[in-house]
Image (tube, rainbow, N blue to C red):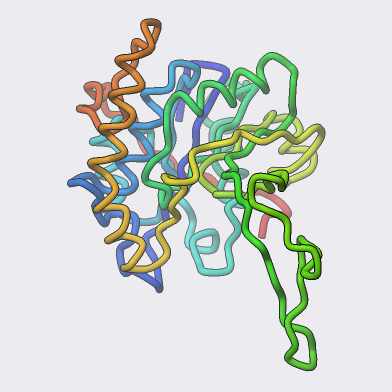
Length: 272
C-alpha cells in the first residue's frame, strides 16, 4: 500500500454485523454506507488518501469502486471483540511495511455507520490538528437533555442537573454527545498512546440532526428518510457561501482513481 500525502483517512468496515447483517453495504439514498464514508473523505480537500480496512470481499470491491485504497484485515482483527484502534494500527503497520517507512502526520478515523459526514466538518477538524491547536478533534453534537440513571434500589437519580431546580433549556449550557462519526488525531500521538484520545482534545461540533449512527433497521430507515433534507440543506448552505467549491456529500462523487493494489500485513504487536 502506498499513500501520497500527510493526511490519511481510514474507514474500518468489517463484514460481520449482528444488528444488521451486511450493515456496511446497506444503502442510504441509494449509496452504501461504506461508499458514503469514502466519498465524504474524498470530498474533503485536506485529506490526501482514503483507506478502507475490511475482511469482506464485497466491501473491498465497493470501497475500490468508490476510490479508496483497500487493506485486507486479518481475521483476528475482524471479530466482535476487535477494537477500532487495532484496525487503525494494522493499517499503519501495513503502510510502514509496504512503503518507505514514512507515516502520515495526521490520521482521520471515519465511521462508516455515520451516513451524513460533512466534508467541510472534516476539513475544519483536520486544520485544527495540522495548525497545532489540538492533538485530537472528534465529532460531537450539542445536547440539552436531562439525563438520569437508575440506582441500585431502582430509584431514579439525576445525572447532569439538580432535579429540584428545573432550569429552562435556554438557560443551560449545552453538553456534547460523542457521535462516533470521525476522529482526527496526530499519528505520532496515536502510536504512542495506542488510542484515539491523547494530548489536547477538542470538539468538532456537528449538526445534531444529522448525527445518526446506524445500529439497527430503524436507524437505517430514519437515515434514508432524512437524506433528501440533508442534501437540500447542504446544497443551500453551499450556494450561500461564495467560497465553497466542493460539491455536497450527497452529490455525484468524483471519479475514482486507478485501482490500488491490496496488501495485508500481520497484526500490530500488542493490538487487541
